[in-house]
Amino acid sequence: MTHTSALDAVDSEIADLIHSEEARQADTIRLIASENYVSKAVLEATGTVLTNKYSEGYPGKRYYEGQQFIDPIEQLAIDRAKSVFGVDHANVQPYSGSPANLAIYLAFLKPGDTVLGMALPMGGHLTHGWSVSATGTWFNPVRYGVRQDTGRVDMDEVREIALRERPKLIFSGGTAIPRTIDFPAFAEIAREVGAVLVADIAHIAGLIAGGAHPSPVGHADVISTTTHKTLRGPRGAMLMSNEEHAKAIDKAVFPGLQGGPHNHTTAAIAVALKEASQPEFRTYAQQVVSNAQALGEELASRGFDLVSGGTDNHLLLIDLTSKGVSGKVAAKALDAAGIETNYNTVPFDPRKPFDPSGLRLGAAAITSRGLGVEEAKAVGGWMDEVVTAVAKGDADATIAKVRAEVSALTGKFPTPGLD
Ligand code: DSN
Image 1 (spheres, rainbow, N blue to C red):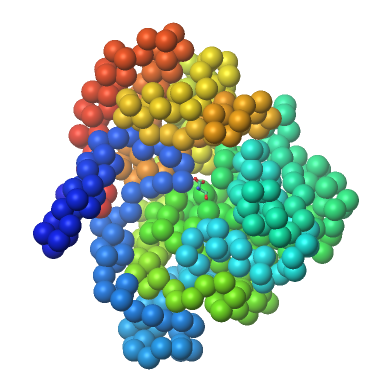
Image 2 (image 1 turned 30 degrees about the vertical axis):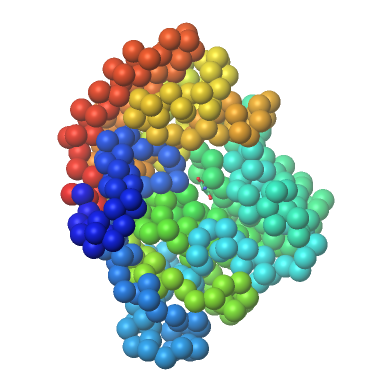
């Protein structure tokens, strides 16, 4: 448990809730694809006096005094991002992924301009021009998806749409893509139509840093990422690019869209990037993929329908239609059994987003926790037991049994950040 004596004394209600969340995170198998466990070092950096400081501007060019220690902190984060990802330029100030992506629009587009992104129900992100997002309202969104027969992006289709619609901006990447993203093919299309290519690597940044997914560097004009998913840093984001786009991006983040950067987050990003540059991080990244594949194979062997047939990365998307259970019902039963997932649309989903046909799973958090292939397979078996029992309409005993087995397993693996 985190040592929080002042918090316990000042606000025991919040302290108790935080301690309960610590216990929950320790006692569950966390398969939410966008989540992870940060290290104790990252956690400590986020809870510091850096939160007291305003620093509008960039290192060496601030609008407030007293930046003697903030400047080198931000510069370290920038330098480490450049070194880990091999880019010319990094902006570590975006508050999170959505503001980071909005800054890209501000840097390169005018309202009404056309943007090509992956449709949200096909695996894209809200900010890639989906209709309920500002990006789909203020700009003219056109969309690509995946093929129904393969569950994979069809680059010929992307090219056809791009040639027809002439977007100024193309987004590659998304939030529910279990397969390798073909950055060189996207780059070729973007060049052909004169569009700026964005690689949104929020989900796979840690895999790229660890050499377990090809890098978009040299292909994409701009790289956008959050820092808290597979990269295992604090809640935050970064924009990276070559020198050509550096000024436009910096101007769009500040003063275009944001005020003062969150310096405690910047410091924690720097720490996470230092961790990501260590040899152990490469082992972690490879293990994330092995664990996701082992979980996928176990589920497939038990009759689960995996979108695209499997995974190349940390993420699995399961269509539960053949199991006779909706994603929401399955996710709630699994959560009761101590296995945390999120319900998710699957491509061509006939159901609504709030009660879709699928489940999305990710292996980053369990890998950070130290679980391996054997445990990933056991988790697949428990998921099958719970979903099968739910489909039969009598799951209480199974959920209780699996809950106990989950607790027995998690008890053997210390929780990062709390150990
Ligand atoms: N909400 C994130 C995810 O779960 O993938 C994306 O913003």
